[in-house]
Image (cartoon, rainbow, N blue to C red; front, side):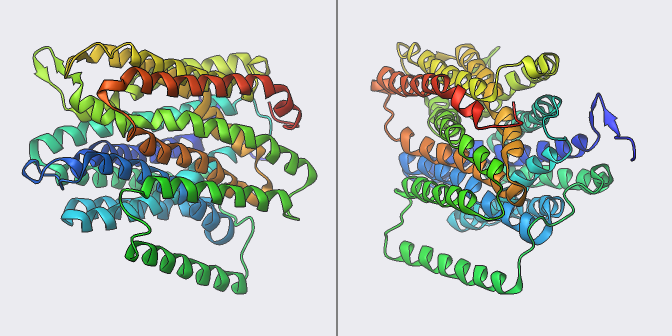
Length: 479
């Protein structure tokens, strides 16, 4: 048996996945933080002039659709290409989407670009995380630390992307911002190809190859789905205004169907089925968390533009930099959390307790925004927002990298990539809900808005604490 190559005690393949995810998130969040402004700014400001509520709803729905597409990426990996190739080709499609946003004007560019970015991100995101999970043996105590470092890469990209796209958008227009997102994804693809050897044979095999007959059935089903969407748009059953609601419903129904398939499949063993059941409450808690967190790109993007004083030492920073604030905390805290989990090992709190603390912390951070309701107009101190988003970051580190790690460990062998797609379904539900909920916000009702949503999250977290023993009993072999 060959000796495992490591870097700082972690598998060497982590470095490659760290890099490609960093640049994918650079491009994605760089684009997302200016997307809402592009949609609702007036045409004289370089935007498309949509209603603000419609624009932020589209951003939330789009984020949900990105995570919905992870099921396609997971399916392609499990049944057609394997995880490693799907990551590569997904990155190529993402870059094409950003190029479309940069060069095609008006809503046509938005439509083509967002569809391509959504499909490419679906292939890359689910499989990069799943591929990382294959580098660790079952119940390897290094896995939480490894995923926390991986999460550091995600947030380096999430931090730098909005900084650069925001500056370019302000100086040279929205299409320049979208263009630099394409360049970032190109850099990520280049390093991935150069260092593919670090992954060895991991992710090269197709775990559940599809038959020719089944592939034909899938293609027919896909064609029917496309026709159904076209008909819904043509008959105004699906509109830009109800897109976030429709997206939430579709992802929720798809999630129920996926759980049903895994729980009834003959390819899933009895122990694996028990682990899938344990995943259900984690799935729900994750959706609640992200319905608040992802408002950074919906409600809080508007809040940043209209309520926050961005003057820093006499210079006014772009409002889109709200997308880079929380990643600063993640970058600072990720190494500390990684070391903490490694030191604690199996003495660390269990996964359901970490989830509970993450959701409770998210609710408490939302409450802090209610304390800023007394500031009039564009006078909210940027340092106050920076501090509150530190609470977002601590909560995220308690939940998100842990969620990625536990999903790879709870996944049935035949559904490894698709289980990760199911995890991202919960993120997708939360993200589309972030667009729906944001439409209920009013500057006159800030205390009620932040207070009620914060309270709901805290209650969900307390329920998770109560049922944690049941979840642990249904996670044999997983901490």
